Length: 386
Image (cartoon, rainbow, N blue to C red):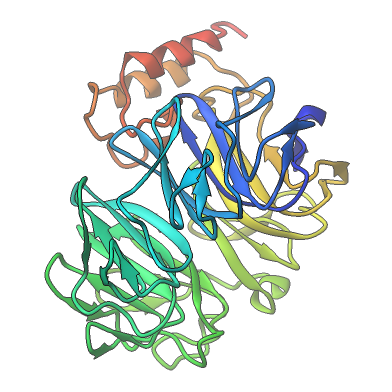
């Protein structure tokens, strides 16, 4: 794991990462980033860290992009010096509340059917009952059925359904142990779910090779011991992801993402690992602590968490793993050349046009589409003949 550079250090734990307008956004418990005051949230433009306004009064746990704004959720009650109960939005110039917010922390965010979805520890959103999960239509908070009976930790979209993971065992009044899907009108279980107490929760979700992947602290799925900490759902049944490295199966998975055509998993007590669809491989020696967030920034994997070194190098709480090319080396041959240009061009669409599966690497500015702005980022690193 290569350090993101001396200037990239965060003072304390980074617990959420995303990309917006060509910049990496990191959030967590820290008060400074790269030696600059940045209360709980900061942005990195590829050169240095900068604050986003005056930040928050308490930790930020989740990030997403909605209608062009950066959305942050966490334990805070003020953002940019004004009231923002556990959720706020950054419009590029200032922090604004999202309605009246929640009555407790927000720990997961995503966008589903054009609406913002938040999950966490809260039981009200916008002053109405919304047990641990709610949706924002741009002006008002709404519940999703009767919600859950315990906390929500992870959100994703799979097969046009909203997927929710956490410590619950009831969703919408039906049994759904640690994971459930919302089809837009009702809750459904995914098989018989995961085993154990609330602490055996689902903490991370991702989509890889047209399957849903769940990671967390569980040791069985559908009553079978074969799934230690990680399992995949093909739409009808759960299956394991090969044979996990021993240290992974004994620990817990806290973060998942897809990078360079592989699934990346990270957590506490084991190296960051990648699954190419057939085998697991460690990415170097990993970090000396835990990883709680993963993202892809300009073609490189970025990890955030509670660690002081990555790959044996000093890199406080954030680090990157990559070829050294901060652009789209699609075929990972350590050159940004004609083959990469062909792949980049094949993924291009228009503004606000969602990209096809397998094209996420080309979204250099993190605006959820692949357009001429992304092509310009690519051309800045294009080295034909090298």
